[in-house]
Length: 305
Image 1 (cartoon, helix red, strand yellow):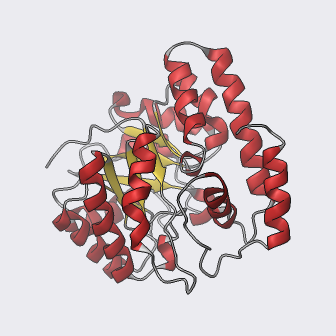
Image 2 (cartoon, rainbow, N blue to C red):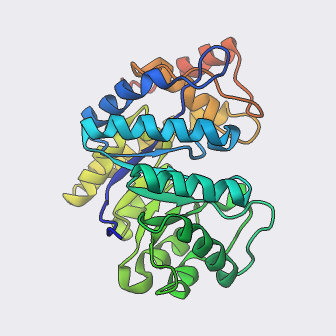
């Protein structure tokens, strides 16, 4: 099994849908190039931002295959989120990603029979790992959505040596003390990707070195600048850029409905990049034309562009 060496920034892509909300694969090649040109050298498909849990197994496979073709040209790392489905479907998606050559897997916990302990979560991920023995596996910690609140520092110490393909987590939580415990677990050998864009500058100064964050799709320069500034000890610049990103996130969150900012992020993608991703699928609720107009007005007043 290949080791997992990627560190840095990964954009959790927004799956594009046509007007009839069928999957639009035609934008993927240009999407990959846009991100690569913006110095984002990793992509995550079929995650929360990609509405993977609102797609069929067949659709998720097709998206994975098309992105694999795209990243061959851009030399980007492709991570595939396979969770958020009944276990038989998760295993099928894991086998598929493994067979077609995905670079890594990310997996949510079971969302109904929720793991309550590190041992529970380890058993689940070990089952997933066995279906994809050649592909590095990471766990997707996002307790706001999953309501699985296992402490990630403890889990990463407990799981050592128990899952051959296991290499780390995506940590989408504002509990930065827990995140730092995860970064330090097992002697710092696991990859820990920050999923909270509002915490980037502070998290990087405390030991994080990587992130998977939705704003990297539409505002990639801000994410790149924050990480580079911290690496170069230009902390004032990192703080200033973080403030700009936080303001943008606050506006996008303000217009979010149904507990998710994916529809507002898709609008921002359409407004501020050349990539057209369409609307979000149900059960997410798209914002109205008047709300789009007002949101754009608020973003434009920040003079980011």
